[in-house]
Amino acid sequence: MILDKFNLDGKVAIVTGASRGLGQGMAVALAEAGADIVGVGVSDSSATSAAVEAAGRRYLAIKADLTSTDCVDGIITQAISAFGRIDILVNNAGTIKRNDLLDFTEEDWDTVMDLNLKTLFFLSQAVAREFVDQGNGGRIINIASMLSYQGGIRVASYTSSKSGVKGLTMLMANELAGQGINVNAIAPGYMATDNTQQLRNDEKRNAEILARIPAGRWGTPGDLAGAVVFLASDAAAYVNGTTLAVDGGWLAR
Image (tube, rainbow, N blue to C red; front, top):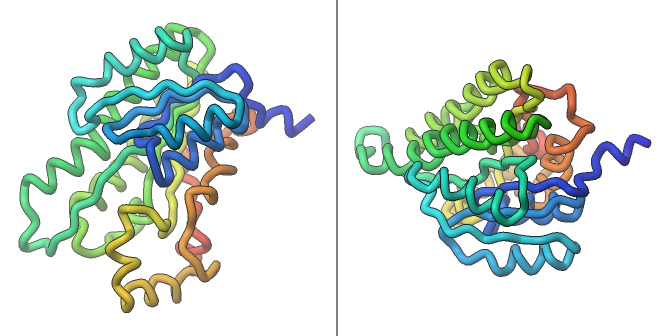
C-alpha cells in the first residue's frame, strides 16, 4: 500500500533547531510518522520533547552551539549511544542578519555563514559517513529558502548561505546517491516564525508580502509537515538533489 511508504517506524531523525518554529513542527511531524527524534540546539526544547512523546516516540535533547563545528562529533556519538542508529538528518538550524549592503559587517557575515552553511555541510558529512558505515543508506534534508532563488534586500549573508544550501544539496546528492543516501531540500516561503517577526511587524512590508502570496497568508510550521515526512520516507526513494518549495505559490507569481 502506498501509505506504508510514508511510515517511519523504527527510524531515528536528527533535527537541528528543533526547539521552536519550523524545526519543532518538522520534528513533531516525523515523530507522528513513527520516528524517534534527536533535537539539537542551544534553546530549551521541552515543548518539542513533550509533543514528540505525546506522539508515542522517544526524544533526546542535545545542547550544542551549531555556530561552531566543534560539536559535530559529539552529536553523532550521543545520538548513536541513545538510539543505536541514525536514519534521517534535517538541517534546519539557521539565523539571519539584516543590514544595508554598504554597512554589512564581517561579523554578521561570518555568524550567518558559519551556522547556515559551514556547520550544515560538516554535520551532513559526519552523518553521511555514519550512513555508509551502517550500510542502509539514509536521508538528508536541508532547509533552504525563497532566497535560494532570489536576491532579497538587506540580507547579504543569508541570501549567500541559502543559495549555497541549494547548491550543496545538489552536490551531495550527486556524490552520495550511489551509497543509497538521498539528499534533498525544502525551501519554505514566508513563514510566521521568529526570523520573520520584524517583517510581520512592519505594516507596509507585511502587506506587500501578503499581496504577492497567491495563498494569501503567511505559512506555518505545520505547512512543512507533509514535505519533510515525504522526503524522509521510502515514498521519496527516487527523489534526489531537488529543492521543494513550500511557499503558498510565491515563486509562481
